[in-house]
Length: 395
Image 1 (cartoon, rainbow, N blue to C red):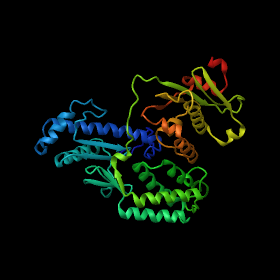
Image 2: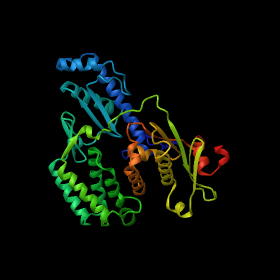
Image 3: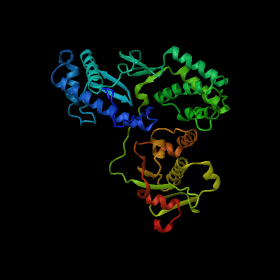
């Protein structure tokens, strides 16, 4: 205690790592950031209602706010707001129209996060202030609506790609190069399969895992081809519209029939009938797994393989004209993989094959035509029964 005495109270401290969605603690941090953003924007709404920013608003801005004032509110309130805050786990990005709003927004963030909550801010040299900013080597401008790679960064990336193709990069430098390429590819919406192949030296079973960060990466012939494609894009496509990273939305009509496919993968070694199975109402399929398959793939990978088989079995036949197909599975990794991105080299390879399949590509439009949902345990009864060849449960 402060007076030097010994207390009988036991204190413990838990440290949790946040890694931009890569760790469980990231979700805790994201929820806290979302709540903080909502509070900051509510304060800005109060200042807006009090006329704090009226002095610098043009008639066009006033009309813009009036036109949008009747729109439905989103999770953070009105859509007639001339400022916004978006946070990636613990990295906030704030934008505002006009000097008065920008200054007030900074003050509200500083007061709420620093004084009220007591959060520690990053060092000033990491802050970005202006009409444009650089993040992971790429320059953004919300005012111009474009994103571009600065010439010096593009040249440095081309040098790294040349060294990678020559087998001169260590696994650690290869992984750092991939962080930049991943960022650029997501912004330009280039072929995802290229990046998935280039991640393989850093994944499970790759050079980084086998030999450590100091080992040199000798690229395969396919990886060299992908490196060349990256160099071509960086050399000839200096930037893009910010809208290039947005998937166009053409939603399915609300009255569309939803066809539900339920599947599962069972790999219990003591169950002779364990395997891959799925059911489309009274139609069902079961495939027993060999020991080689059980040794080669863990449950998330088997779930993904089963999901792809389930989809392709019916999408090329009975459901080729369906406007909405819902795939249900047990493993969380499967919907996460489809909706976001694969995290292991093997899963990325499986996902790359699916993304390249013409039937799957046809089902991507209109938005919502193909959906994926996780159903745990007993809730996924039809898929579970099919995976274990339990005909009595299916009937």
